[in-house]
Length: 462
Ligand code: 2HG
Ligand code: ZN
Image 1: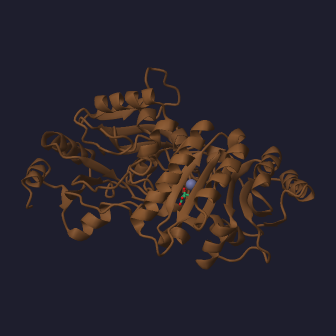
Image 2: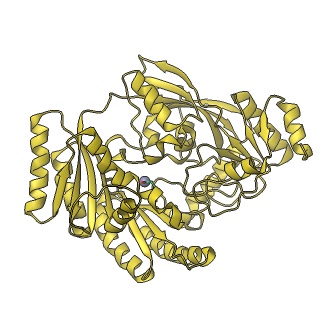
Image 3: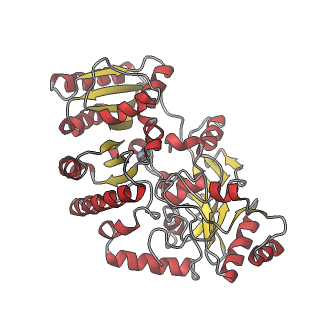
C-alpha cells in the first residue's frame, strides 16, 4: 500500500481485504445520490466482527474517518465518502447466522440484502415484513441505520419495530450486544433503539436479530384513479375504515408518465391526475365485499373516477410496478428529492399548502409526487431540466426546500420521513428537531464516538 496508514491497518488485521483500485473507490464511495465525487482513502471489506473492531481502533489511533457502507441505495448521501474517509463495507458479512423457531427470530450479519432476509424468513414459513423497491440491493444494516420504512409501514411499522437485538461496534471500538432478542427488557436506556436511525454516526451495526411474523394473508391489489388531490385522504379514510390495509400508496400523472416511458403497462385508457395503489387482505367473502363497498362508496361520491382490481399475482405485480418503478424511471433526470412527513391528520392542509408552494416555485420544472400517503409520507422528485447546470439546479431546489422546511415546521412535520438526513438534508435538520435536541444528539455522539471518527459531517456538523 502506498499510504503508511494502510500498512499499519494491515499490520493490525493481516487478513483484511483492502482495496485502493480506482474503480472500487468510485463504486464504494457513493450512494444513489450521485451528487458528490467519491474520494475515499481506501475500501475495507471486513469478514468478521473482530476485523470491524480492528478497523475502528486503527481509525481512532490514526484519526481517519470511517464511512460505514451497506448496499448504498440511500438517497441522502449518508454513505458518501467525499473526504478521504475509509469506507467500511459490510458486503462480505452477509450470512444468516441463526433461526430460532421458538423466539421466531432470525439473526443475520449486517451486509445481508433485504431480499435475502425475506427469502430466509419464508423458508421457515414466516415473514420479515419491512419491504420496499430497493430490496434486492439494500442491506439490513443500512435499513437499520436509517430506520427504513417502505410500502408496508401502514400495516407493520418501520424497521425499528422488527429489531430484537443488535451487535454494534461503537466509535470507541467497544462491541455491544444490545437487547439480545428480548421482548420485554425494562432495564434502562434502550441503546438498541438509539442506534436504529443513527446513520452510522454512533456505531457500526455488525449483526442483527430480527423479529419474524406470520406470512401475510392472501391479498388483492387495487389501482384507483382519482380526479383531484383533495379526494386522496377521503379515499384513504374510506378504505381504511372497511379493510385491513397492507399498503396505500399514491402517485401523480407525471409519475405514471415516466414509468410508462420506462416500459410499464398503461392501466386505463383515459389519463387521470392522481392514482392510488392499495393492497388489502381478502381472506373471506366478507372482506371481498368490503373492498367492493369501499370502491363503490368512493365512486358514488366522486372520490375516484376509475379502478381495477388484480385477478392474478402477475396482474398484482404489474400494478405494483407502476408505483415501485418510479424511482428508477426518474434516475436519468438527476432528480432533487424531498422525503417529508406530517401526521395523517395534518396531511390535507399540508398538501394544499405544498401544492401551492411548489407550483409557485417550480413553474417550468417537471415535479413528480408520490409516496406512502397512508403514513403521511410524501416523496417529491424535481427533475433537472436538460439545459440547466447541475449546480444551478441544486441551488434552486435548496432554496425551495428551505420554504418547504418552514411549512413542515408549521405543521410539526419532518424533513426526512424515511431516507435519513445524511448530507442532503443536514441544512434543514433544525426545524424538524429543536436546537436543544441537536445539542443533546451531539453530546450522545461524543459519548459513543469520542474522537468523531464515525461518518463525520453526516446528520449534523461536528
Ligand atoms: C420509494 O418510496 C422510495 O419509492 C424512493 O422511498 C423515493 O425516489 C424517491 O424519492
Ligand atoms: Zn419511500
